Length: 473
Image (tube, rainbow, N blue to C red; front, side, top):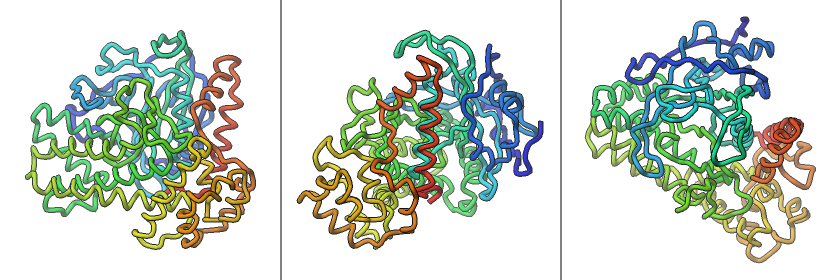
């Protein structure tokens, strides 16, 4: 099947050897109905030239891509789940299907799957993904990308024609196979498995592989483990700051759900905040609020500590501790930067940017549930006070409690103010992705097989992405 001229296969997953993954095969599904294909993402890796039939052959039936991984590989890993160590993990319903180079950046990207059948790590699971779960993940990644969060991109969603039974939603329910385009298949839990097995040699192989493939700038480092930890810590701090500015709650921040490139992925019970609430919890089973919104930075740091403990098998502890100690400062810098970017204003230096970020969080608390998260950033984009105060929420912003924020944002010049001319900003309301809207989109699909609200929402989010212009910043 013809690939585009930008298609550059570079399968590297087997470089680590047989102890890190297992060969697997996709399930033979009774149907393959294409529900979503991400042609914008596909164009960056030379796969946008496929017809729908060819697309389904590769991303619904999983025929290998030319010169790529054959057979697919299910990764082995362990992890802390709600801070309890679990040695019985691994890719239980997915695999790494292909690896390709991204046009323009030369980054190595993975095409990984979710819902493609059982593997040696499925335990008692069926290896499948509900169609609702696939729909939710496509929506999540689109919204996160629009808000400038480093995230995997939903590449393909195919309905697979099976009836699945689930204990936490009405059953039987429809099934799907999802393909993600992401930056790495190597998780914190990949290191944890080798540490659990006391395989210092494999920890060393992992360090060398990750530096060679993902952090080549660290090749000459004296202490490669500490240098890698510092780099991963910085990327993770950036991710945490972007989550907080986006009002995003991942929901299940286990160590096996964090990777070494600082990219968000695997969206189960996520939520976007309806309004500012540090205690907001996404997962219905997170009874203690361990992964609530306000604890996400702390959780990311705890997970980095677990990664650091693995690296002690090959290096001294003191340089690793020093690398970890830099997380707090980097996170606060990244949070200030993320909030500044979301507000569309120029930097005035770290101190001023951090003060603006703090004032923004306090302003977001005005009126409790009266002021929603996304409308705040929409109203104040580019620091346009006249627009914000004249809008439907202007009376909230005029309150004395918002005076500090009004004063501080007035001191920041707009960044690329031409963005405000986009038609997106002419309307009174921004795009949100709150729970009730996702449920309504799913109800249309489940009740009448009506995909129009789903595709309309994706189109609207794409408009927001183009208007904000936060990609890759």
